[in-house]
Structure formats: C-alpha cells, structure tokens
Length: 195
Image 1 (tube, one colour):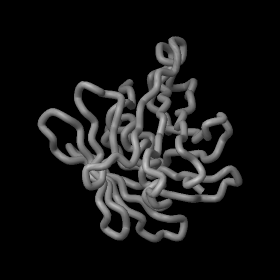
Image 2 (image 1 turned 90 degrees about the vertical axis):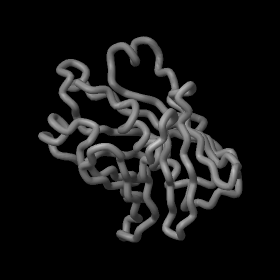
Image 3 (image 1 turned 60 degrees about the horizontal axis):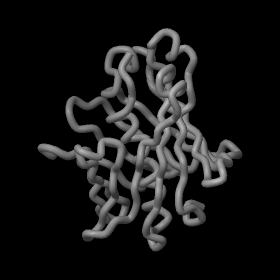
C-alpha cells in the first residue's frame, strides 16, 4: 500500500479540551496522500493519569488503521526515563520491528530495526531541528520534516504536521510502515507540547 506513495502528510488532530485547558488528551492523527485525501488514521491509547503526570514519558499504544477501520500497524511503548522506544507489530500480533532512541552528544539519534534485523539510523541534526533522515549504508531512504501549520494553528493549538518523504523507491513495504510509525515517535519525543 505505501509503495504507491512518494510522500505522505501526518496531521495531528486539534483537541479543543487541550487547547482551552492545557490538559493532555489522547493524540489522534490523519495520514494524507499528496492530494490531501485520507489514507490512514492513528489514535493513542493511554491512561489519563499517565498523560497528566508522566507526560511525554508515558506508556502508550498507537493504533494505525485504514479508511475502513481495519488495523494495519500497532506501536507500543512502556514508561521510560531517558531513551524512548517503540515496538511495532502487525494486526495479528507479529513483531514488525522497533525504534530505540540512542545517546548522541549533539544531535538526536534513533535506531530503527525491522523484524529481519535490517537497521536504519535516524538522525536529527541539531541545526535542522524539524528534520530527521533515515539512512542505511550511507544512503538516504526517507525524511520526516515537521511542517509549519499556519499562524492560528501553531499559536492556538497543540497539533503538529509532518511530511514523510520516501526518497528511495526500492525501500521495502515493511520498512516504509516502520518509517511512517517513526513519525509518531518523533512527534511524541520532540514536538509534543507540555501543558
């Protein structure tokens, strides 16, 4: 399915309760094709107290579903102190891979591993704070960029927009799903606003 797209937009939905109260609500996202048509949806499952007290370190499950409401990917993480992680699984519960934040003195770094053990390095340079590159053996496979949402959306809401671009057409479908899932992890780790 994702082989059909060179780029996708991940748009976080605005939660009015969060806008007016600052209380962290469950994240919801729409995934759009280049024409602005809905392709997928994602929603967070987490506890109210963990959102309130643990904020961006909270345990959670993200469900990614298609337009018919059928699950296509699940991402889950436990509570963490310093380095976040995300485990991906298929709707049948089969392991699809994981994403682990790594220590890097200046830049931001993740390792993205699929079920076969193929490893991508995800780098977010400190001087390009809204861009993350997915690299394998020195080549760029994809890029995630946080996009400006407009003055009113940025000033009065907590919703983020991301562009996911697949630069290598030979990237396998399974790895494309993990790259898309990584967009949610990047949002939760770096761009989720605190109340």
